[in-house]
Length: 154
Image 1: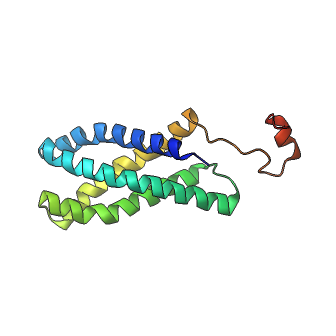
Image 2: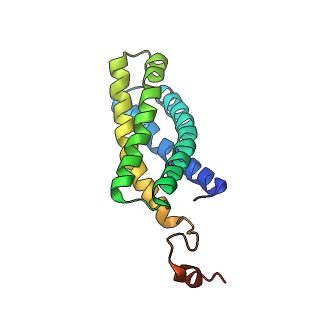
Image 3: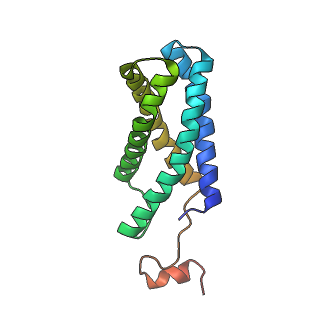
């Protein structure tokens, strides 16, 4: 499992990089002032950061409870990204409609567009993060007697 400090680094880097991409892109795509898109993107990023921490912690705990590890297959990475974005969609859509004074349908389309971006972004970012900052493996977790010896534990 990841440490709290590692989860905070993950969340902050994910949100800062995502915001730097999505604010100018959203301004261009939706032909709205950067201020309006920036406020929505910033609020969404803060809400997503909180959700990211909670969701990843719960997802990892569920993986450990079900399978005894946090190694994610491609299918699990896709499920992880889809479930994360679905949770945000439900919360953000009415807030976007309210703040931008657009219909729920327009807010839905905007939110789905942002979600589509973040779906791909989350998949790529999380994979890259796992490569750059691998999850520490606990020795002996898989029942292999030689694992402790191979890991240097005595």
